[in-house]
Length: 114
Image (cartoon, rainbow, N blue to C red; front, side, top):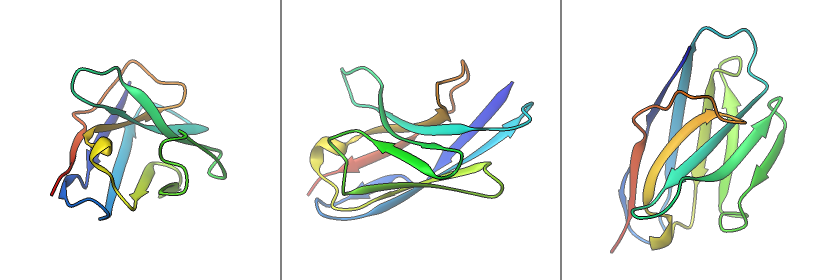
């Protein structure tokens, strides 16, 4: 079983920045890939960014050039730096393994509004 605790969300104006952090814990030996996901009201959860072996990164087209994913703490922490935020980035953000496990944290709310 794996647990994820997300933090760092909040209310920010368009064009602003936020830094999300996720701590993973539980019964696992090695995490090869993790991802950040988000779910906006009335929409399906989607992959925002993933990081593989701490090096290879992939981003949804909608966030390319604005978001940066990274890992720390021997791979048990994953960071999402979000810059130039737009109202359409408003969602609850979650982290999980990539591909996802069955375990989801509470997520952290990101609201982009003036």
